[in-house]
Image 1 (cartoon, rainbow, N blue to C red):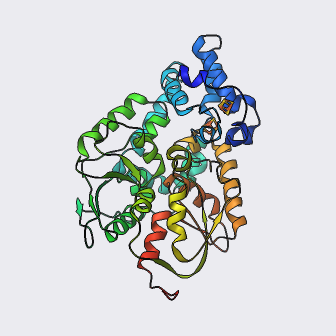
Image 2 (image 1 turned 90 degrees about the vertical axis):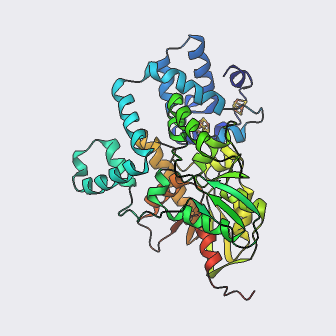
Image 3 (image 1 turned 180 degrees about the vertical axis):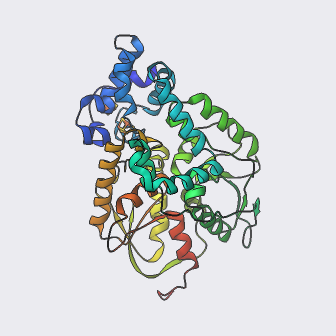
Length: 394
Ligand code: SF4
Ligand code: SF4
């Protein structure tokens, strides 16, 4: 933490990149302000409970890392600071609620059950606390049927690579088609896939919430169950990928699925069945957290019939960040509305991104649009283009 603090020269270049500073307009809600608050709290010149509200409002989007010319590693500051300080400043009630949410979200079975209960509870949502109403609003009207993937999927044609697939927790319940599409496209491009059935949550949500012990135990379990004889562990959700990429103890490097496929190279050209404008949204934990920006765009640009559009303020978080929607619903909603407006301004019929959290946030803010704007994962779109008949003449 000390190094991250001392490398900040207070230049302020990070301020316009920071979503909470853009929404709230307070120096203390900027990266520079938070670094100062954390420094003072660590030195004992500021009470922890005076610093924590500002640190808690940080989305952890890491846009400040991208913007910082001095290379301040903000993630090396805010994650351990939260872990170090949270138990001192947080009330027992808040801690228990957070643990209950994590226990639910980290298990696909528990989350599926809770989501079904939540859908049934919508009729009496007026009686529930505000944070629960936000959670219910984010749930889709129906849950898709689970898609069971086998433990082993062979490569189509000559084998070009062998990978393991992280199937995730929340994503597996809300959008099982993402893993299925990713597996199909990987196999179609000569990739053999292992899916360890014992795998669990990667720990990203717990880490984001400052619960490092819990996150460490979950990561340690996955280190034991993923195989060594693979070229990469493939992640399909940016939040999971960002946490796993920083884990040097994994048996193989974690790579985002779009990044891996782009590096491998697609075997055959892709095409949509009709000309379509598609907007790409950078998920923060893909762009800022993992530095993956060009790969998804390169893949999408290979799809015939697809016109790719960029979003205004594309580097700005959509407001979905772990449990942020539940804990800071107003800021999350403001950012969600701004992102939805940016998508509409492109004229796109489809917006694609690489993170289930962003997809849920976008779907919630675009739900009433007519004509509708579909929200897809990058791999879902590529997979549909792969299986579509080529109507573009090649
Ligand atoms: S841009 Fe970097 S060095 Fe400048 S104030 Fe922000 S964190 Fe500090
Ligand atoms: S991580 Fe995001 S929200 Fe937090 S200080 Fe940096 S830019 Fe602002």
